[in-house]
Structure formats: structure tokens, C-alpha cells
Image (tube, rainbow over all chains, first blue to last red; front, side, top):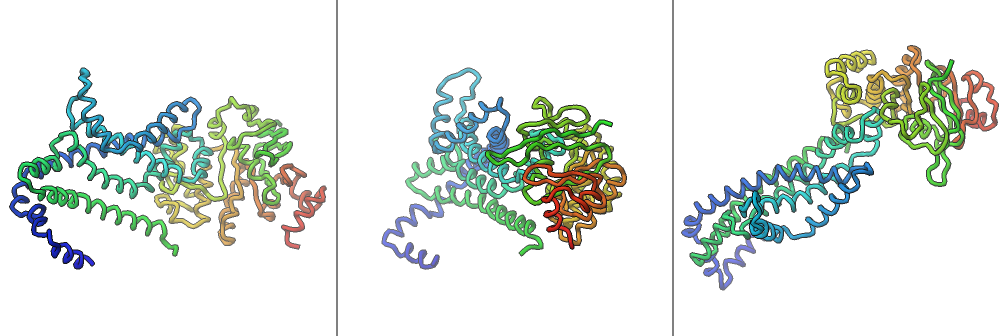
Amino acid sequence: MLLALGVAITSSPGWPNVKELFFSWEHAKGVFPDVLDGFWLNVRLFLICEVVILVLGLLVALARVARSPWLAPVRVLAVVYTDLLRGIPTLLLVLMLGFGMPALGLQGVPISGTFWAGVALVLSYSAYVAEVFRAGIDSVHPSQVASAQALGLSRPQALRFVVVPQAVRRVVPPLLNDFVSLQKDTALVSAVAVFDAVFAARDYAAYNFNYTPYVVVAAFFVVLTVPLARFTDWLQRRWLARERAGQL
Amino acid sequence: MSALLEVRGLRKAYGDRLVLDSVDLDVHAHDVVCLIGSSGSGKSTLLRCLDLLEDVDDGTITLGGVEISDPLVDPREVRKRVGMVFQAYNLFPHLSVLDNCTLAPRRVHGDSKAAAEERALGLLDQFGLAEHARKHPDRLSGGQQQRVALVRALCTGPDLLLLDEITAALDPELVGEVLTIVRDLAAAGTTMVLATHEMAFARDVATKVCFLHQGRILEQGPPDQLFTDPREDRTRQFLARVLPA
């Protein structure tokens, strides 16, 4: 199949052109240092955003499962937050915050496009991650809460010591899946002129009329995401095996 | 002597379905009260009401002279004094046996880690579970898990223990090891209310047996009287079905 596809592509009439435009060894070598520099920004952005997203996502999920009547406004806020931020395409959030917030000219508000593009990623992804956490929390059987309460634990204590630890364990594979996705979406920050790998590639491509840099960046992302994807699969298999130990 | 636990006119409905109706029950210190009756007769609901896991619709529950069915009473204060064990064990699968047992003493009663562990290990040892203290519950057999659940309930030193059909989910050969413990607890003077299908056990251990039918305590009395000479026809019919001829 792959071979047939390869033959079909390389025997197409436009292949020599495409080969020169996208797969030029010269240009690949030329752009490599710039892309490497830019990619370091993508990696840092990903690492910082991931931590903030985990914390914020869990807080939003906890707000959504809160029961006390006086927390009702917080609950409503959490619902609006997830609905709204999952509804807006991430690219638009990056554009609006990346260009809009610095333009406000407010004292004490960072004017860095990178910062606000990162905030946009955090807002968008924490809404998704909150739903993943909430699904995990809902999947813990109510009898666990009943038995925690029978021991005298308050509801927050039952969440803290009984429900959330079990929920987090269950949602690690879907969370890792979201983070594979986040790694790629750090490329969206290039839309607000942040000098990441994609921006560096576009810069080079526009200057040299050659698209090889895009292929180079794609290779960088693949090298970063594939190990995490493999790790996710491995973890999922291991937990399935453990849960089904001794059963068919 | 006034009762440790007094239930008067307890009523509980799920929607239109009345599951408990004018239930009166006295439990004195060192009593072992067995609730018997067919499935759906209200045994479990009664126990859950006593632990305030269900809101009651009417009637009063008094524990140690304090009306705990009052909505202003903090259920946590009640549950500090009452232990409960469930049919499905409900151990916390992510915690070791020892951590299951020390969670409430540490987080609810404010005991130090060392004190809580010392007490838990003592009780685990007493019930033949010392070697399993560091394992996770899913490594244990059903009978062992239910014994751990009993120890977990005992670790806070409750005045009253509620046991909800704790042998119903067990393989027949594992029932004995759990009932032996309950027997030992009864002999040691632990106050218990238990829902059970084990009639022979109820006859041996109970100080009082209550027969529930359609949400009412139809008949209650000492086991000798209730099992050999029941007053009510319903009780007789039930016993005829569950007791070997």
C-alpha cells in the first residue's frame, strides 16, 4: 500500500517540482538551525502550559462537581467556562488574546505575544482537560463516597482522599492524548508573530520560495509526539492488564 | 436504663414508594440487634437512615440522648460515633489495607499517623490480617476484604456498629471467617445492629431479632421466642421459607 502510494506520488507529472519545493536537502540544512531555535520555544511553551492546564483543569472539574448550594455560582461559572472555551477554535483564541491583550495598553499587563498565546492555549486546553477530569470523577462509584462519608469524612475530604486519586489514575491515558495534541497546537502561536519553529519555517520559506522548512518542522513535531503517543499506549495496556489480572 | 439508640415513628419514602413506615426500635449498649426479612423489606434503608446516609421523611432517631435526625445536626459528628460496613466491602482500592484503616482516624479524629497505625495494626493482627497490612485490597479474598472493612469501621472506636448484609456477597466457604469475627465482637460487648440472611447466626448471637415486612417492623423479640414461637403469620411464613425444615 505505502509502496504503491510512494510510486504513485513519485511518478506523478509534477513530482520533480514538488521534490525541489518540499524536499530540498540544501534548504533543509539551511533552515535547520533556525527551526531548532524556534522549536525550543515550542517545547518550553508546551512544558509550562501543561502544568498550568493540569491545575486549572482539575480546579474547573472540581467546581463542576461541587454540591454545596452556596457554590452554585462557581458551578455555573465552570459550566460557562468549559462551554465557551471549548466552543472557540484555539486559533481564534490565540489571535484574539495574542493581538488584543497587548493592544489594551494596560499597566502591569504583559505585552509579550508569546505570553498571551500561551494563555490562550491554557484556556482552551484546560476546558478540555476539565471535562476529562470530570468524567474520571463521575466514573468513581458512589458507594466509594458513601463509605468515605460513613467513616465521617466531609465531602471535600472524600473528594481529596478517595475520589480524585482514583479518578486521576483512570484518566491518565486520555490526558496524555490531549497533551500529544497540545504539543502540536503550540504551532498556533506562530499566528501572532511569535518566533517559534513554524514562524521560523514560514520566514525562511517566504524568503527562499521553498517549502522544505515545513517538512523539517513536521519532522520535529513527529519526533516529539510519537514517543509520548507510544508511552500512552504502553501505559493503557499495562493498566488494562493489571485491572483484568486473573480474569478473562 | 435509657437506650443508646432510640428510633421512633421513622418513615422514609422514595417518591411514592414507602420503604420504611412507623419504625420503632430501641438498641441498648451491648445489644446485638438482627434485622431479618426478605429483600426489599427495608433492612438496608433502615441502617442507612441510622447512619444519616439517607434523609428521613418523618420520625426521630436519638443517639446517646441527642436527636440526630434533627437537620441541624452535623452528620459527621454522628458518624464519628457510628461505624458502618457494607455488603460490597467498599474498600478504597487505591489505598493499602493499612491506609484504608487509618484514613478516618487521621483525617476525621485527628490522630497522629503513628497512633493510628499502631491501633490499626493491633486490630488487623487480632483479626488475622497483619500479614496483609501493606497490600492493596484487590489482592485479598472477599472474606479478607470484608474483615478489613470491619477493622476499618472499628479503628475509630465506634459506640455502635451497623453491618449491612456483610456476608451476602461472599462465597459460602468465606462466610464463616467473617461471622466468627462478628461473634467475637458480640462476645466482647460491641453494640451492633445488623441486617442479615444468616438465620442460624442471628439465633446464636442476637439479643433481639426484628422481622421487617414491607417497611415495618412486624415483630421483634428475643431470638428464642421469635424463631420458635413467632406471633405473626407473616413471620412464620418467612421463617418457613428460610429455615431448613
